[in-house]
Length: 244
Image (cartoon, rainbow, N blue to C red; front, side, top):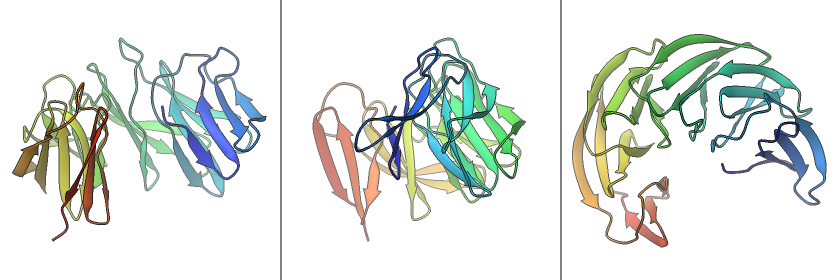
């Protein structure tokens, strides 16, 4: 989990039976609020902060639930069951136009939730077990979700609103994904970076290269900034010029 800062607050899912999710003052460490949540252990996922009707909602995951918490007061607004056999949910939620998507690995797959206008409740819209992404993230591009799965080592394209599987491909091994300038950058857990063209029913590999330095798993998420692609592998950081 990455900690989240908003104003003077630092949010953290500590995973205790009483102090489950907390907010502390970033200057002093003083406790601002504590939320009991569902009393479950933390699940490695970094939170998202959503603003609806003037209310900020912190969305995070614990062992068996997705939680929506009032970011100002720490009141648990809602929870939605999301389980897998290892209680690991290491993806950040993705919110767009009233809809919240989250995917978990180990065969569980993704779920789409519709948030109420004020963020106080949710209802399930669809589920799709194909893209059971474990920790590589996903992107929304032109009304379609793109990301890899955990089970079949393929990459999937889903319709954002319906969850229908539009297509799949294997441009590289399973891994992390980001996008820029209408293209997908897929970084496999075997150390290959692939430039991928998204299509209406999947994706097509354009080019690729192997990351030359570093050791241990290739799990870090790449970053693109000002025409440069940043890739970390263990203790090595590599930067590539990608701007035309």
